[in-house]
Image (cartoon, rainbow, N blue to C red; front, side):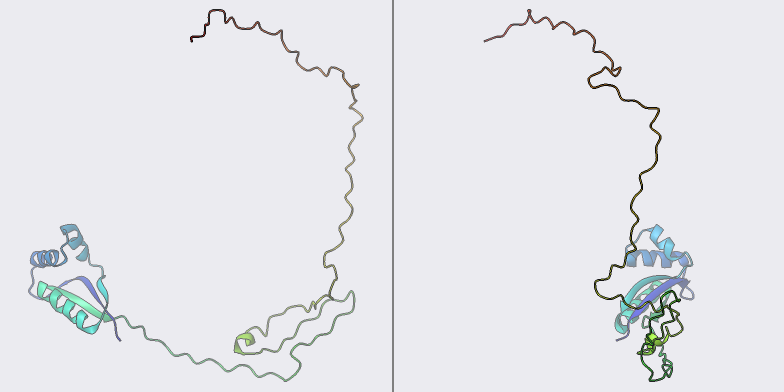
Length: 186
């Protein structure tokens, strides 16, 4: 089912007066002068969309009677058919050419036969063949034991236990406040 949109770009029906058309549209849309002025700004504005053919024709006729020329356009998007290229031909060779390189040798290139046309796009990707480690093998490198930093502490000495380290002395205790003038009521 086709859907349509109604757009207005400020054009008038031949012989229509601008002020009369503005007044008609203001009454039709129940809008103030500022909103009607936006309709006549010269830009293409969609007034209503997602209409069926009968409703679109009704809107077009009503607006044309009011003096405004509107554009009725189909909202249906044409879908372009695209034919996919056939997948490249490949040998019936094994899907993965797997051989572990000798220790110390650079890893060899992994060769994979594509399973479908999507994967055929990745044929030219070069990836090293790292293989899979056996079960239970630790894959992390061994961490070296931490080494304590060498710090020269010869300039420091320790005071004997209980000695005064130069803390600020507490001043004499202040006298307690005088509360002799306070009484309790019963």
